[in-house]
Length: 484
Ligand code: C2O
Ligand code: CU
Image (cartoon, rainbow, N blue to C red; front, side, top):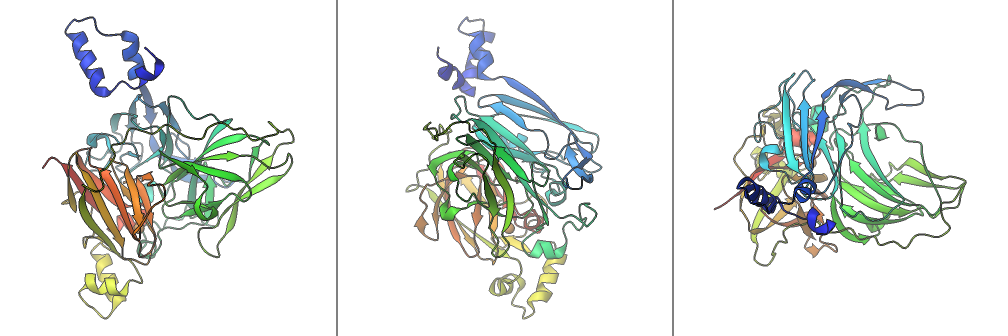
């Protein structure tokens, strides 16, 4: 039996084989069984620690960390492996861990109260799930995320393809944005009303893999797979790689038709990922600047790609770029059940404010009322308080669904659905070019986006904005997937 066949054995056939073995038949190939589901063990300990975000001069910043480091340790497994991750809470408050973008069973999704009891200080919870999709994912708490993630609790989760695309180097850049005080401490104004009602907690210090970047050494002719993960609470990145030829090969872990970034920038809202393949075409000794141009008038140099004196090769390799597709059920858009979702709230949405606030002529006053009630942002008119709530939508399990989402606000929102990937099929009525699979889709102010999916993972799933201050201020709901 070939390697390929072994790796694609399904959970169901694994269970059938195990049952057959238990029944004493001799059908079972032990070697096959072992390679189908290797259990990989990990330990995560969220707790207080320090980070060296600022390196010139070197400063130790008190932070909350997984296993003492920011980002937390990289979890790297093969597609088809089973992960068993023991999380011991060393924080002084409750926590959980969510495996962002991984299609886990409901009980392993790490949402406090909704999928599990939060992990109390000193307690341990063991997560166990299969690495069904290859791709770039990440993990983070879902309890008071705006502060726990904002203080440094996050890490990369990489699931390798059985036959990865050929590159010289596979590199992960975990991007974050911190609000530091003049002494290099994390500003403790988490969840303040201004951040909540505007763009979220935009910081003043951008880091790559936990420190302020300076340069990244490359070699002429080198081909790099660059996995970008935006773990910031609120900052949206728009990375411009200047003269380098960049091909986007995956978004949110799912392969996409390789293409150059639209408008010359790789745009990533909070929680979003992109896998890029970059050929280092500059001359030995030269440099290419990577700039972030997302916010108008606030461009800055993120990092320089600096070429080592020795080239790796003179010409660009012609190796294929296509990643093998994951096994996602294809939605039948023509036959799909259609649903509507509207997002509103926030500052500068006068009309929306009147709708929500009961026609007051004093938008600031009604904003204050809403904030005291805990809600500033609304999905279909409801501001979430906590993770337990009636579903805003119920999707018939196993069927195709199209959700038409309208952003009625003056702000960007990266909208995330748990437990599934969905195709982004249209924006403002125009079909998208690549019908990309995503788990988090960035919506521009007033934009209308349609997504399509097969609701094949049963349970109550969080559906929320990943600007963590918006999420905390109500922009969160539950989508139920159940047999009708
Ligand atoms: Cu990355 Cu609901 O989360
Ligand atoms: Cu938002």
